[in-house]
Image (cartoon, rainbow, N blue to C red; front, side, top):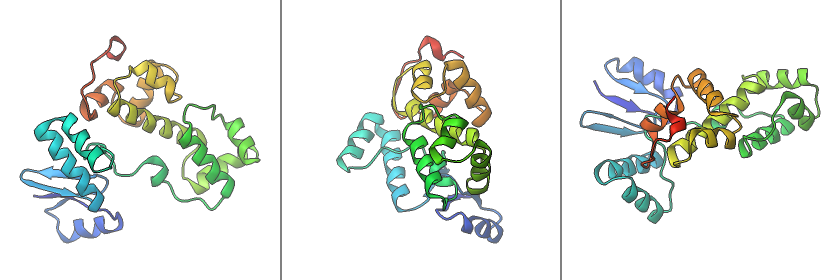
Length: 209
């Protein structure tokens, strides 16, 4: 069995049906199956190369190489290659599109249903219908996913404590962030950091949950 990745989701089902002994990972940036390592595309191949450098020589050298190449040190390959903003359908509603951009730019801002409806100049009920029709998620759930994604990035790339990250991302407290991570990702912030961090970061007392 060989595990492979594909950059185009529409091709994944076809590949899986044509080669049933192959396990297809449609969302991974890159995967490894024994001596075989595959990436989802050209830029994902750069992510893969940096991951191999980090594996052999440590995160500091990998970051130095990424800086020299003028690229970002990306998330580990097992994670989804699609961000929340990129994964949702492109809306044709210009005001809603501006709202989505604002949420992504400032996840910790006060994105209540009332404030978001005011930004789009529609009623709260109509905004909920817009989100469900255009995005496929309720407004509150979309904001929650954006905040979780922002927290993921900080857990991976900084040594900040969970409580500080929760505040920066609009998740409130470390306990609220813990419950939200369990609901959305099925893991705690501490466990997520231990698995996916790209640089060593000491465990703080608030991360014991």
